[in-house]
Length: 188
Ligand SMILES: [Fe+2]
Ligand SMILES: [Fe+2]
Image (cartoon, rainbow, N blue to C red; front, side, top):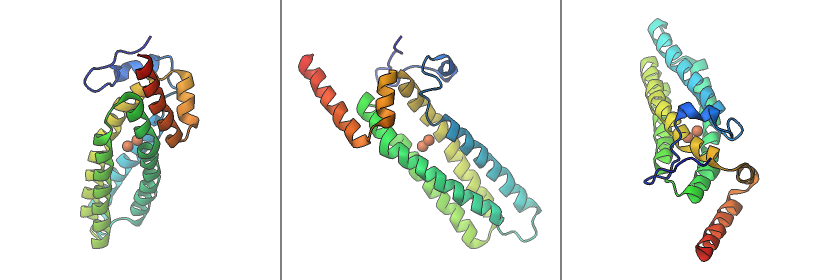
């Protein structure tokens, strides 16, 4: 059965509590595994950076935490590149849903990471801990909102369409969706 579509933003009204009983779960749920890792790493960094500040006499950011943060940011930037380069444009073309707010979150996360860099430059462990926490406070709602927009839309796809999405190049997918839209207008 097709999920009802909310008229104003076209996101199917499928609450999180119902995802796991959907016929296409978990085959068509992208993002969830990566997001869980991101949450765990971010929580670890928040806890450890504050602990490091409160216990270290040196008061410079702990170098292993800095290294972890930037390695993780590099993995997240691939993840965000995939979302902005393929997932968001596909869902926008397919459902007409605006992904602009989620893209703005990515920008805010990068600005927050610059504050982490500044704290490292200042050798200030407290500033570092606060910057990590600020980054965390932007990340956590972003992941939740992104899942709430994206997961119902992915579950909504029939399995053939999901395979086409997974295997297709975004430029080809967008062309095909546009052609199909024109075909539907002509036939309708
Ligand atoms: Fe994501
Ligand atoms: Fe994202």
